[in-house]
Image (cartoon, rainbow, N blue to C red):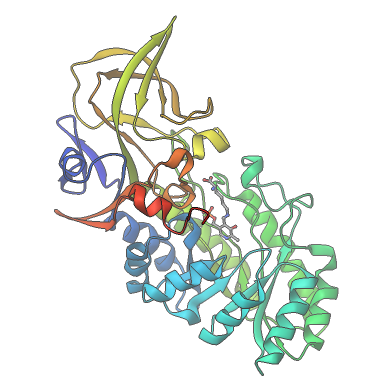
Length: 413
Ligand code: LLP
């Protein structure tokens, strides 16, 4: 069920008219639905067992209000930096439910994670394993470790968000994993607890996930033959979402299929979903500043830009754009472009819309990899973030100010 719906051509976020939010907070702003975050997270949690762990991938949207909403539901968290760990702690997340992914963990980040007692480090190379061992030994501890293996499976998604091929920088080649596990077993600062893989994002077919799992299960058998036993298997990110008309798989059915298959192995299941929890829990609002026509081409120049939402520019992503209320403007096929000085600064191309200057628009499915990938390019303050909860709404991040952008800069004496 969507929590962003039109009633009499007026867009609502839960029970609040988006026009009201635009008036109260200005544009561009990210508007989120609490109910959507909760519903999407619970689809995972409800399908998993009490000893399994649904770890929300913080990178999708890391606002502490959102992390707090999920922490209250008992969520675990998948982090990729010390910064994300600090956010989880600040939001009241349980460190024992945190898995730490990422190819380049620094020693300082390892120390912080060991101090607070995270669930597990997803180690991505033999070199990182040695580093983690030394850090843990120096603290007189043993680090809980899962090796992230690269199963060499084609996720059939955009090349920039495909991570499970041998040519990608991620993980340990599955063929060398046994050797690295043996080494891990010999290290006093390492406690082997699991195995993980993550082959990519925005998969709208679960077949590659299942293929990857089969390869990992084969490795688990090989490990058992070598007297190395694991507690969990982590299959990485969640399933893809609907941006346009994608038919997305049912989360419950996918998890049930996985659970049945891994039952004989007696392993707990860990998942790290981000997009499928956050994307359709948020929209990005914007105002049409100008309309212009160059030859046959119609442009709507809006006040949101690639610095607010980079997905169309970076991944050629298609995201829906609609008026938030009826317009008296003119109907045409518009390119929706921002103020940034780059030809790649567009949010949508060839969109049939009825527009006039001053209209407010919404970019849909913007809750994941939107604000977290925002930048200050062209000295543009990052957007405000607002959480709607029923008929209430809360400012969960103030719009940045120009002063805040220059903070920490100084003139030469
Ligand atoms: N676990 C790991 C180790 C990951 O690298 C990722 C995403 C996830 C979990 C979460 O995957 P999800 O459930 O969201 O598919 N910025 C891109 C997506 C990059 C994904 C990076 N890794 C986009 O906007 O499409």
